[in-house]
Length: 160
Image 1 (tube, one colour):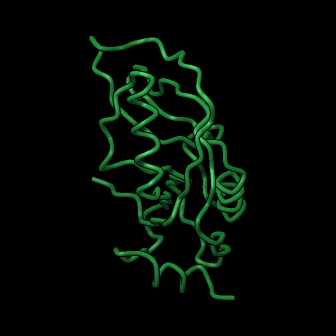
Image 2 (image 1 turned 90 degrees about the horizontal axis):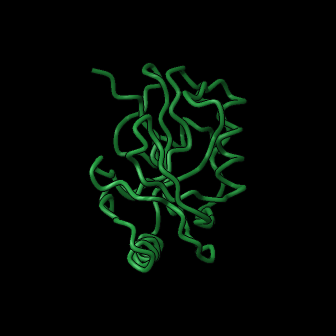
């Protein structure tokens, strides 16, 4: 088994030092992005974050040791199950993801010393930032859609 540090050296574009917290996100397959875009179009929700769409697994201001387990094999499967508005101003339209694998990865990171900035991990992908004059009720019902996460991003937290 390779160490997490070796995994990071092979998989990340920017070197991960672990000295400035820990950020981990999953990137979707292009087919999954297309499915989300189609769903948003079908139910009348905006999809403005196509180029930035991801699912954060952990944002930890605390250092995470390099000895944590390597993430599971790709792809990681999930389902979009509903939409909600997130943020203090309720101005971020998110698609909530059900995925036992994402939750398990988040738990591994917490067990390894990561400290989440949220009390509960709720996997989601942000699909749009909603201007205050365009807010709408988020009540659409739909059958869950299958998605796949195909790559992982791990970085130091960017600090100003």
